[in-house]
Length: 114
Length: 111
Image (cartoon, rainbow over all chains, first blue to last red; front, top):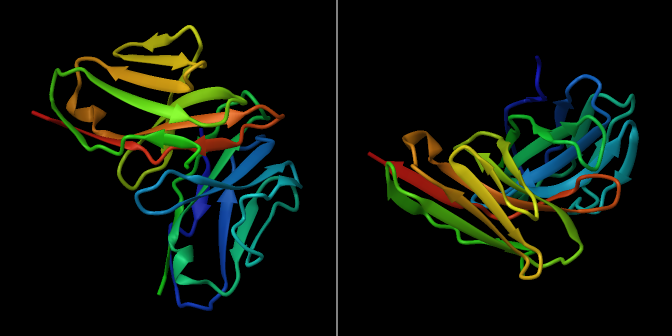
């Protein structure tokens, strides 16, 4: 069956540009997570959605980062006025429901800010 | 101090070797524990959950010591295909599975 998909797979942005990263979770999955993975590091939690509700955004590094999931399926992570330190792989994961469900990760979007 | 600490490696081992990875976590409220595997330029994939009693899946054995806040992964009879980064992961309770990752330990298995 189809897994989590993300687009674009690669994005090069000039410093100061806005970018939008898309995540299509597995159909029917209620929970959706965004993580940021810097080179040589493990993924770091950014934000969590349960259906369309954003229940935890404690990991978003600054107010330039914004995420939404308006209809409880597809999610978009938007980064405004990108900075070089935003360069990373952005991973989306979904799970069927919550606490004890396995998270399935998408292939990630590799963002490079020049 | 990082919430989850791992030896970054790399561990370079010959095929057939046994290799052990260790991990410590700082939050005693952590409730769930996992090992994920990540191949180069790929997404993390769940290798196995880790239970207090210890658990085994084929050549892989995971152990958890809650008192010491220590997690381990043992790989027996290493294969070339085991070459990857192994991520130690914990999550707190609270209704959803917010995963906290270590930086990973790199394993390279050579012929």
